[in-house]
Length: 446
Image 1 (cartoon, rainbow, N blue to C red):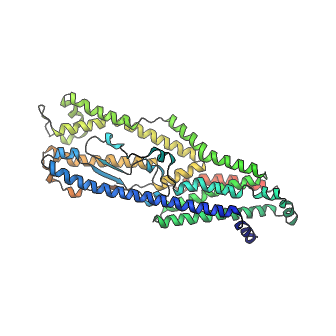
Image 2 (cartoon, rainbow, N blue to C red):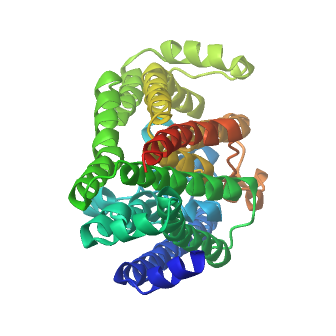
Image 3 (cartoon, rainbow, N blue to C red):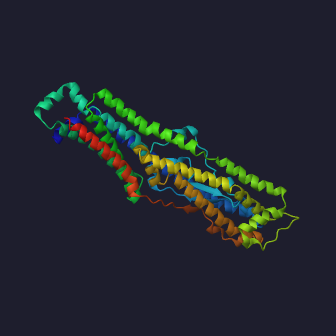
């Protein structure tokens, strides 16, 4: 039976159209992912070269004044993208993967990003994750919506009913052939992505692989349920497309609009303004007003005197740090509300397989907002380490050559995100099982 069903399916136009569409778009998405990795690698190499060149040039002009030299020098922290991120680029196209900072106030530098074409950011990247979440379900719908209705409308269902009592089994086998074809294409593209993008077979890769299979299984079962209703082709097509639009576009947009309004995040600009105001107002205050707060944060520097009648680097960098402290609450509020947005979205996504798949892909690929917040946290720690390593030398009025500048290369941050297989697989699996049960009960009518 399967042999005949396969031969019949391979002769259809929908088979060749789906094959060409999925393979071509899938390969294009993988190449776009490759291009993304190459672009990031070039940016990283350029940033490393820039830091070395910047240190070398500034040493020529400010070798005798370390405080002034470090006013200009920028140091780079890089979140090198894992190759798996090319499968689901996520928010890494708007959140920078590297930051260059001076030892001055951090809040004014933390949210600097590259300028990008807004129209390109709006349309997003055609990565493999996008193809799996949006295109594969449409192909499944196109191949399965008329499994029963086509037989009924062509008048062959009565002939089949007279020849066999296992009508439900026939429909199921016909469905399996078409679903199996889509699954085969998915497996082929995932293995190709692993080879072209040089993605190791890590736990995260297998998690994305399994999540993709489960996601397509959900859509397969949903199509199976619509077929089991034994409606005409127009009804099935309209219903399935409506469900696709609701799950992939409408519902995520509603959830996004809800969390944006429920947890309104202050602009990053507000934190920058707070930092600059907190710093600039110190110019008009007594130096003790600045140094009291600075000494409270760093009592180890109390041994350094601050002259009242002239400029000193300890006072200047103290002002910079006090500016960061002035913006601390605003920055913490912004981070807290972003985390609340993410938490609410993840909880709602447990009941929406399309959202759950998208968030899971980004999480596993390290391209979600939580990964970026962790990077900003690492940037704060890196900035703190830099400042404290340089402060003593600046306040002691040491020349620049006391520092081994060869050790101050661009640093790399490696993100580590754990995930739960149960949390990843169970929500979509339960929804799939429920739909399967109802579809099976409907087919029993045959």
